[in-house]
Image (tube, rainbow over all chains, first blue to last red; front, side, top):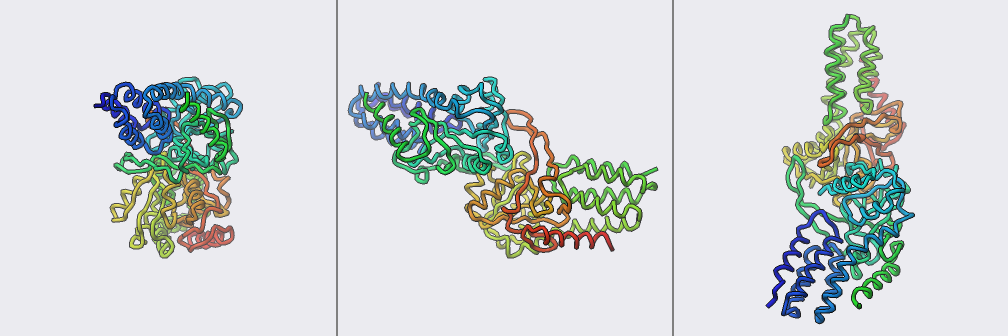
Length: 288
Length: 288
């Protein structure tokens, strides 16, 4: 008997269907799902393996989901510890972005280019807003979440403009730095992000402009390089044509990333440094 | 007194307002405009300088217009020679694409990627269609003419698919060659084409895929490198946001072009070879 399993699955389904909000939002929803389960399910031990499988399948690209699920599965024998850890992870998702933003001060400034919508990048740009010039935002088709980003930034008084994805080569020569979010960080420091991110980082590199990734360490995948992280494909409409199925994410290799700005510090994309940050994070949230 | 000047300007205005059809179509319309003028204008000598200025201003990016206008201006004292040259240029625009296509046989085959809509590339792909696999067409925002290209290709039974512009990095690794048209060829062999072309050629280069430019030699600009060819900007709508003003074209540097496939032969983008082809073309159409 497992009251709450239905509620768990309802939240997991939200994650599966989500198309705009990123890895933080999805991770937080999975935390909420485990909280519902831990609070209500009598047969927790029996249902946890199923819950873990469903959570992991909801979006295999996002390491935030992997890590929340990893912590939950480790605590599946101790309901109170599980509830405690999930509550603290809920706070984590609220506060980590602000820590990332603090670490970005002095790095992200001037004219900036970004891609798509990332709540972490939005928090960063809000924090450093007084030092910003113009913010060029790739529209980021398919999906076009860049328009959401532009509207939020303009709402904050930041001089953000959308650019069509083909215009990156031109405008990236006008900026001081590129900042993007991450849907996952591979174990060697590569980054999985919205399609177009590799092109953006490559063109920035060609123009001598540094690319920074602003991301919570919870998105680090301790076991997989980006090549081994499954990339989701979805149906999108090409205006005037019809449906096409295209991958939503792609890999940005470590060679194109100047540094990762995380809630646990700033690091060049190096295996050892990232792993240490990640271990500190797991220690902070697995033991209380 | 210049009957026909109004008709001339009507055609020039069509060129100025044209947004999908490329350099060949525009060049042909300018030819028609000079034919109207040559056939009807009594004070031809007096009106030619104005006509030349208006023609050149209609689209400063397109060297085809420059060359038609150059030939017309050289013959402005000899009405019959002018009419004769313009008639032969009209035929040129009809037949040159087919010559380009013939030269592309044995070069363009297998899986191919292209960008935007180019009538020259369309003629090439039609010619080599039996050797084609899948043709990936960048949607090419702003404008999105790639969708027109896909529809025409599919109408010919070619397996063409549109891809969003951010997907180039992924799919370019699946193709055997890239082929694009040109709005202008700079005097050193660089190419001006729809925005996104530089990114496409660069990503192809990174993936070890050759980029070919299929173009009539009339698009060669004998006096200007790409840096010195004026790039048109236009207002475009970003869906969900509003109007933005963006350049329509950009430069593809010679280092990223494997060869130019022209109606006067195939050449690597070298100054001397191109200039010789161009001189042969001018000789063929300026003297009769």
